[in-house]
Structure formats: structure tokens, C-alpha cells
Length: 346
Image (cartoon, rainbow, N blue to C red; front, side, top):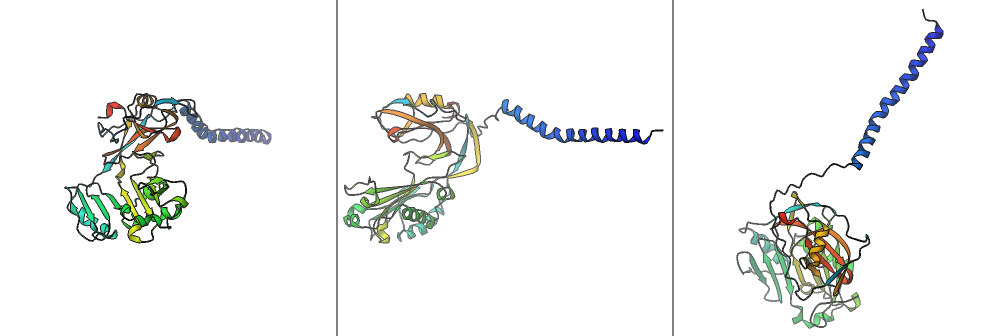
């Protein structure tokens, strides 16, 4: 029969080893997770294969390039070379309105907001033009792509250059957004995207950028889409958006807006596929070989300081939102190269 001393001894041993075992059991799950995380960091799993469910994509619609601008190129980036970029990207489906029956009736109230009371002239099955017999204004609309272009012939009204009410940055942005909001056209990604305000002089009969508000006759507000998948959405003219408004200094409502353009495609956020990319090195070689598109020319030698991925929104209707490589450099140089691997591009 065990003595009390022996019972106490074995009890203490059981408690000691039991506590140690409990600690070990408690430590196993977090240690396993840590080990697994370290292993996956060192040996990451291969990314899922691109889905390419849209098949071959249509060629991106770039405007006609300036054939006289053929720069030489030099790469001078902070990294000392081309950056490491993703090798797969999403491609989004873009909706196109195929119903023409009721679309014109939906547009007429918008036209009346801009003081066009009469029915429009039919140009063709897709395009219509509103005019105002009392004002030198015109509204061109495309009922399939839901695009708008409003103009006031300010050149026929030279007194408009003497008006002193050109709005400042904040007021101009507010008025531009209010225009599209009142027309029911201010999408969330435009409302939440970045904007660019440019003061313009009209003294020569052309709209020329000027440095300050004091020397301006007009102000232009470009609205850009918010970033998508942490990538910028770029347009054919670089820092000029297909959605913009130009305001005068007149406080007369009928003369306040001298130009406005709205070309906007609705992107289906949940309808996308992934595609392999050609790689930034190959894109750089294509740009040097003259295969890219120059959105904004720089000097005779284009010194490229930055390369990145972005989504390209054409100035003309497009079926898909596709990625491009963007090369930026001195003198405002901006060049685009289609990013999707040629195997999946028409």
C-alpha cells in the first residue's frame, strides 16, 4: 500500500507532466500555422491558370497616331530598370445598349434640361442632333452607346471673353459634377474618381491652357474613373478624359457651359475573365519598335521614368475593358502598349 509521501510524489509528477503536455497541445496549432505560412512564403503555390473565357479579344481602338513623331527611347526609372508587374490581369465585359425603341424617349428629358425643346434631327439609326433656334447650341447623342456632346458656339459671342465669372477649381468641379448629376449620368466611379481642372484662354479663337484663373476665359474639368483593381483607367489622350465640361465666365445659364462631352461605358464588375499578359519587357521592346500608341508626345528622345499597368478606356465604344502597359516620361510623354498576350488578341 502506497504511503502518503509516495501519493504526493506521483501526484506532483502527474500534474507537472500533464501541464507540460497541455501547453504542448495548445502550441501545436499556432506553430503549425506559422510553419505553413513560412513554407508558403518560400514556396508559393502557382497562381490559377487564366480563364480566357471570352476567347480572342478584339484589338484595342487607339486613335490614329502622329506619323511624324518617331522618338528614340531611353529608360531611366527609379528601379534602374523595368519594374516587376503582374503577368495576369482581368478583362471586363462592357455593356452596350441594343434597344433603340425607347432610348430616344429617355434622352429627350435630358435634352430639355439643356434647353432643347424640339425633337432632334435623325442623322442615322444611332445618332441624333438637337438644336435650339434661339441659341447657338447643339447636342449630339448616340442612343446605342449613350454618348453626348454639347456645344455652345462661343466664337459667335465675343463678349463672352469679357465675362469675369470664371469659377475656381472647387466651384468648377462642383458645377461639372452637378451637370452630369442633373442629367442622371454621374456614375459612382466618376463621382469618386480623380478630376483635373485646367484654365483656358480663348483670346486667339482657340482654347489654350493658361497658368492661372486671372488670365482665363474658360475652365475645363475632366472627370476620370476611380481606379479599378488598384489600376488607373486611362484614356486615348492621356490627361484628357472622355467625360469633361468646359465652363465660361458668364453667369447667364444658357452661356455658362460652352462644351461638354460624355462617353462612358458601363463595366460589369462581376462579368470578367483573366488573361495572360505579354510582359513589360516585351511591351517595352514593342514601344521602341513603334508598335505602341503615343497618347502624349514629348521630346525627340523620350526619357521614360515609369512603367505600369492600367485599364484602357477607348474614346469609341468597346466591348471589353482591357489592360495596357503605360510608359510615362519627361515632357509629359505617355505611351500605351496592349498588355494581353498576342495569342489571345485578334
